[in-house]
Image: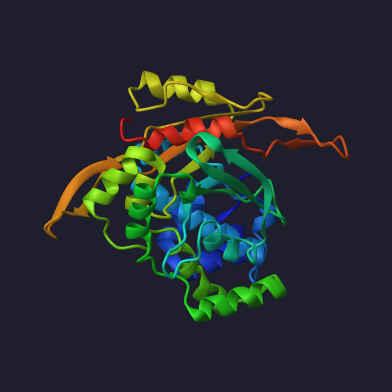
Length: 348
């Protein structure tokens, strides 16, 4: 639905983004990402949790796009013909390890602020082939309007002792991106479901900062040990808790994939289809990035490794089991997820 610039600029969401990211960036975000009318409430003294969540999601989508040139090309072309992105979900990886430094272990690093923002775990997805577990965090106040989070957790204890030692070497230096003030604001947000405007402006950049690398530069030997057993953990060692991918909800993922393949874009060879057929996904192959590692002699060496990527999804309408009402199928699929995760394998 199109909104006038006056409607947008009178909304609390615009005001929050403008105060945090500036007017020009805010205009870019609203031009790029479709925002539904219920999220454009009038500006006031407090910021509801759903508006804070939407602002965070918009900033995170843009951050992912800045890291994925293939995605930026696609979005730029989409905007040029009058389209917009429907942000479906963002995915990130965490590590369930014995020692993650000052950072809470595994999904707890994100649960602690996703829940105060209004997200709740809608379902749990075993990713047995990867020795991981995925959790879909869906927003309670606007499940179809606010992008979900697919938070995966790697189970270090299921790997070899050498692997576990390499993980410890990498993540034990992790820092906590949330300071005491931010944690206090999250407690307040959880209780009131809103924050005064100035406090929301203060908290938002810290929330975005959680989606980053929190540990020190890894040793090359540790990276190679991780890669030998888990491409996913090797990816975490260089990219940390950055968005693994951001996902655009499109009408026909098969048509999008065929068109991009015809353009010579690095699209996945197949579309992943859920067991019930109602969720279909594909993606660009991961962007190749240069990252530094510590060599045995203490010097820094540079290697090319997989970075983040951009994904496409089509979701069908299904009947609600309780009411019979047609609703968007917001579920994920373990097989789909494991197929998509291969985009960051080193061979891609």
